[in-house]
Image 1 (tube, rainbow, N blue to C red):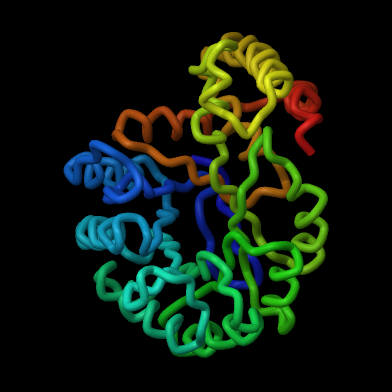
Image 2 (image 1 turned 90 degrees about the vertical axis):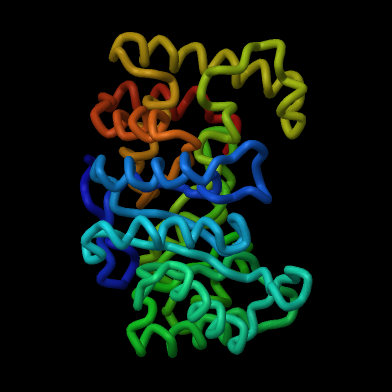
Length: 306
């Protein structure tokens, strides 16, 4: 398993490869999900040495947290790092809410579903329009002082909102959209995060499957956020990654994950998985070592997406 990393200014330490669990119990997000598969995915992750499980209330409206909570009962809690997120208000049509009262209640509700007495990382999942972000974080810091949470995170915040949230230096970690084909954060966020000892976790690291190499040059319509020219360039870049992967007897996905794992700006990578076999495949990425020239080559192949 990959080297352990420390989360921001907190005392939370976790594996560099985690598990994103939106496909564990996230019946409202994905079709044909099976709870038995969800249980198997979480067990496989923990059995494989993954220590970080990244979940959220909105993954199944609490179901993902419940499944993780059930599995946790069979493992040493002190060796598992649980990250969860809240912002969607179940009492107000899932409207985004960052008020101190809501966040404090959301922590208690998540603790009950997770069947644990502390959460290692608690994120504000989305910013609302009205709550001053530093006030929201201060409320979580009060909760942190009680021991119910160990580290404070924000997700989907703009660079300005991240700075506002961190006005008192209390933010430990940021989770945001980042991948080889979505690299704006390198310029807009990473310098501030580094200067303030804030960890970074990318979501959609495989760009909703685009970076797995399973889509052909003619399937660009599935990824309409990219122009035809951009999709062609991505396809060409992936074919170069495939050559590196074949030389290492690895998959394209494993090489892309290895690139993130070796990226000093990224603390933890949290690819999702629908089946335990996908977890096993992702874990194999920790055994892929890129040379400096290979790392730089991949960096350059996707240079246009900064």
